[in-house]
Length: 174
Image (cartoon, rainbow, N blue to C red; front, side, top):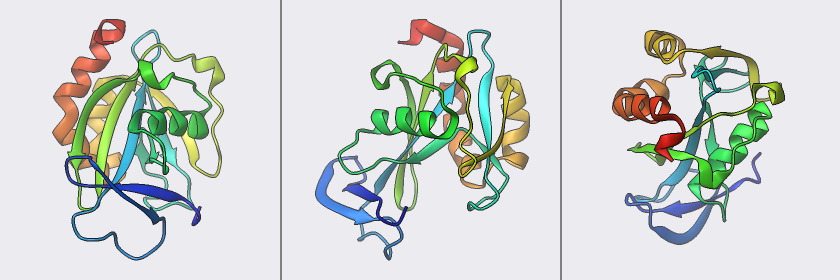
C-alpha cells in the first residue's frame, strides 16, 4: 500500500507532472490527488453500500466503494477498479455516469454511478470491506450523517441532488 503512487493535479484537475507516494508527508501546497468513488445500482434501483474493514481509518463506518486514483489512471478507471477490487462488481469505466466533484483539503473527490451491476458477482475483499448491504437511496439519505465515514457527510451533502438524478435516470443518464 505504501508503494502506491498518485498523480498530482491542481485544483482544476490539471496534471502537475509529478507523483506522490501514499504515506509520504503532506502534498505540496496547491496540489491534490484524485479520489474516485462509485455508487453501484442494481436493476431494481437499490444501491450498494459497504462497511469499511475494522483495520482501516473510519473503521466499520459505511461508504460507497472508493479509493485514490493510481498514477496513470483516469478518475473513471480508478472508480471502476475500486468497485471491482472492493466488491467484485464489474463496471466499464466508460459506462460510469459522472455525478460530480468535491474539492477537499488535499483531494479532488469524484463520484460516479454504475447502473445495472450484477449482484451475483458480489465478493467482498475482507481487507477492505467488513460487510455490505443493498439499500434504497432513501436508506442512504437517512443514514449517511450518522453511519457513514466522516468525509462522506460533506461529500453527500454537496452531491446529493446530482446523485439522486443520476441513479433515478438509470440507463438514460448515460
